Length: 147
Figure (cartoon, rainbow, N blue to C red):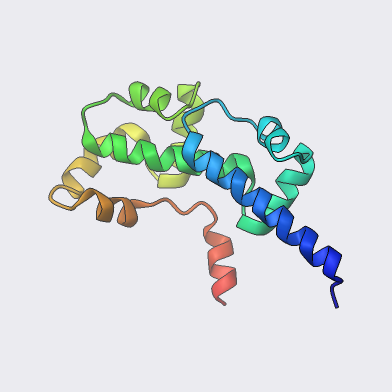
């Protein structure tokens, strides 16, 4: 049985983790690192990383990159920005890292996605296109939790 102080501390930690997740969602295009995120909620970077992974199934950095790639997908579907412009617009500072992460999450390089996605989602409202094309980083965990 969990003691009341331990349960209350767990709730406080979860609230701090939600603040970190909300900051990532809001400020994904800004330069963010785990140390700065941890300082913002008075946790060590290691503790934040461990607790965030337990709560959300991925590290804060992975969550940040997923948010950036989701936004990049929406910008690429619009078709009016180059891959390089999209890379910097979502907060990535390296085109190589951006392309690698994009390909890992989406399955195709950003240039290919840009060419194919505009045609594939033509006529679909943006809110539905976002839901249908949302990347799933941790597919193995999704399969294991459903079993």
